[in-house]
Length: 377
Ligand code: KG4
Ligand code: ZN
Image (tube, rainbow, N blue to C red; front, top):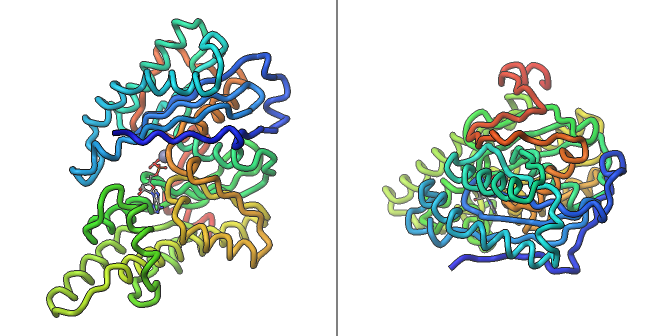
């Protein structure tokens, strides 16, 4: 019933963040990552010198499909049912003994409170039983860490776009593990725009990938949607108006009895989101005067976005880091990686660690949207 995705062994990846990992080696054991912030139960094992040994993801899409979206209570129950099996699977695939786990990294937030609680409670209990530290990881920093999984010698300064179901945040990363917010969505995240648009087009859950697939057979120029905030708002985004445009478009064609080619509508709608994301992200790269860009999070799996980013990066000579599809959407390999960074700096949590649905990014006191606008106009 659940889709389990694992990285083939030939996909083993070596991290090389010498400044951070200089004192750790494989003899120091392994770090177990656990991710349960939404509807993926995931566990991964990383050696202390950054070798990804296993990455197991159990998706709950089948559970939520008939409701057209994630039902938080069902998500928590499913995490509870399958977390032990997934962790055992990750340990087994890494071919290690559980006693070789020397630290456990869990997603503390942001995400669904009940879902997070399952991972945090399981991680804490297992860490306590093994006598090893537990490390709290911010889900967003996890996504950012996936860029280093994809490109271990990724150099800073760089710009990173985190584009997922809950976030559309542009960061300037002056140096490893330091993040400065340049712009963000003022309302819906890009992933929400995909999911809501897909729903209006009658597509199955999860909407983003379904819309991506449908759009591949459509003409992106057949139906034009507005490019929200393209020429205002500094480096901020706004996607809530776009779904209203889609709603009106669909209502109009139905009222007028016009033919509606859903693949063209999906392609046109997707193109509007992609255009704005790509344009503002490359503006951020230009303004930061850097040559390296990482794009992470579930929406970075979108085929048109990947194509468009690669094209722009080639044209402008920018080094683009796009994690593989398994590392774009939620996974525990990214949590183990961010956990390893924290562990190597002695940042371990206390036993009263609690899940935090609205956990803010510790690295950037979010400026008010107006401040962002003025600062990066
Ligand atoms: O990072 P992620 O797995 O979870 C969050 O942290 O939110 O991102 C999930 C989001 C969902 O909105 C999903 O529809 C979107 O990423 N997504 C996509 C694609 N794959 C996932 N959106 C567009 N095209 C895709 N291929
Ligand atoms: Zn995520």
